[in-house]
Image 1 (cartoon, rainbow, N blue to C red):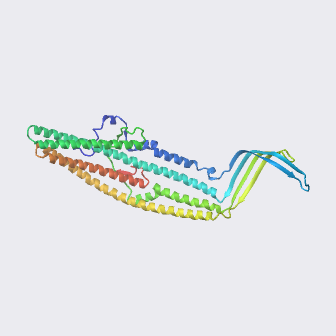
Image 2 (cartoon, helix red, strand yellow; image 1 turned 135 degrees about the vertical axis):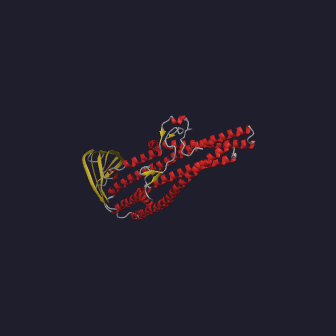
Image 3 (cartoon, one colour; image 1 turned 45 degrees about the vertical axis):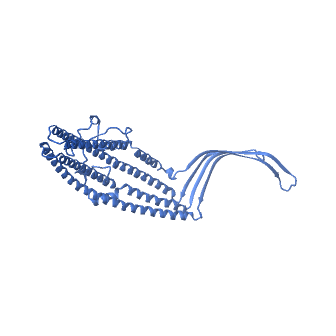
Length: 444
């Protein structure tokens, strides 16, 4: 039987006629088309657009407006020092029309404007971190699915070759049975084994198809059934050069979830400063230039027109608001404490996950050595068994056992490679280096 690294000669010609994809190309296509990433980038653009002086409150508001109002009354007028001298007007209509340009500007409000600007910048950084988390998780997902596809293709080829061997065994035992050199039982057992391998091959085609669908989905391909030819014919392990302590230090510095939690704490502290701004007075100025027209049906004037400048200054201080200011500040301090506790819990969780993944990674590296040795031994055993079987010195069941042992050894090796690659990706993800992948690594 062939070993695990044999090229995939049996893939359909249609696949080889198409452009081959490596992991980097799959990631590049996915970064451009994946819906989750596009949504995250749009959200980040919104947070970027919000960082403006006007949104923070540094700039005044200017409005252009017009207003009309009127009153319709019955009026009775009586002058002093007279008993009967009354004047009555019915349905008196007084009208007022005004228009102009008006500006309002909060000059000072307990440093809340400056704090608002800082909050917007924090939200911008949080948006960038959320986008980074989405991208990093995506790269980890598509890398995992890429190597799963490689794994399924290799398993498919192993099963195809296993079917070929079973077919050859069936041919040999058939010829022997025809000349009376083997029993009907041996022939039927060879037929059963051939059918079992063929059935397993059909099942594996479903696994390959499902892996292809998932990879196309992650790449954002609308036709999820598009065939994908891969340049990688095996799962190659890229050893991580950093030691455990160095990699953990990088995790504490670069892990996106930790950085996002830090920003969340900083944002909470800014929210507290915003609430504390109420402890200070506020200063607001306003000005305007407009035209006002009055129409009267009673009195000494029938019309009045005003055109000119208006202005005003407001200085105020909230003396009492029902103790709400104190309550809100106390609650915000508690929320900040909760965010700090969340950060500490996240560090502990990351430390636990990192320790487990690191140990699993090292164990899988040792396991790879054993599985490579097992595969080599199983290959030699099968070659010997096949020669003896052709000479008639070995029973068909013993050949089948050697064949199964070889196939199992191949499957264990490819599974060990895949699980080691997943540990490698997890370590790169948790340490914030997943976008670098094979940079600063050596092949194993």
